[in-house]
Length: 346
Ligand SMILES: [Zn+2]
Image 1 (cartoon, helix red, strand yellow):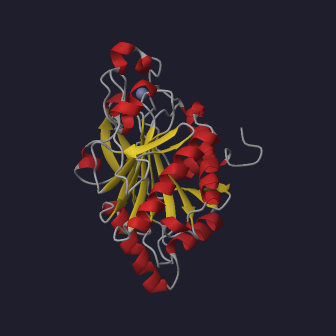
Image 2 (cartoon, rainbow, N blue to C red):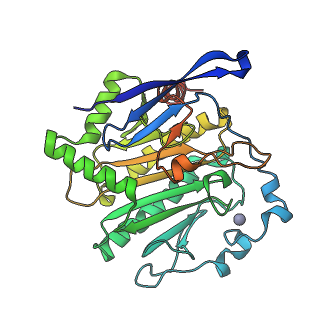
Image 3 (cartoon, helix red, strand yellow):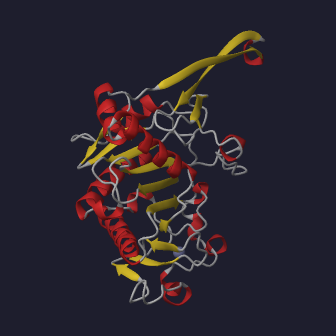
């Protein structure tokens, strides 16, 4: 029922590095088994993640003004109306939930995750991740109860400058929306179609099929199953976590938050050993009263191509052709990350 289609191909040219000998360069185009969208897997190993100068981000000349830092947070960040949040903001230990001063949607919350301005990956412990996700999910559940006409709920996270994050200070965003974006809607429609055609939930089937094959199965963390995506959205690959039995925001319990945190911490440990300093991540929740679009998270590393001129790892392929390109093999990625999900993980 789930088909993984790959179209291998090659380009032939006379290579100046080999005295203009005829050379064949292999690449493949993959077709996403759910959406039928394509992605290129090519130039394997061609991009090396770049280290970021984290210390520099804390120096006064570079840091500039940060409204999320403790001295300004109280006076310089907005509050929600009383009927949205009675206290205007939601606080749990270091996690500090506020409206986005530059909102993209009707309800767009930001969770400042840490007191410290620069938090390297090793500073994200279980408590910090749990607290941030807890206040964000709680906020989305509240919006669901006061404004049920907005059917979709999302967490999105840009971490560090290569990801497009405007502030280095760690923060996540939470949206309740009617317009969750093209990727979300393509997946939602295709998942509904899969149910109509096969009478089954695509996401449960994907978990079973990937587990049976083993090629891209990374591991479990509680109820979350972690996989390397067959068609990666990022140049350095793409990891998906699926909660097959969670469909809408109200299904996502405290237990699920803890399971997600456990898995994320495993991925972060893998990132740290591979010099990955930046990522985009999002968590999708479908509408209520459906059983075909399971909650899932995606996380993709981001990097500058070099630190000389800070070239972006996204180019016309992603921005104008809407075509992801990966220089990492999903199967190799899965092999590498899975050791961080085993009991005797490094
Ligand atoms: Zn700050």
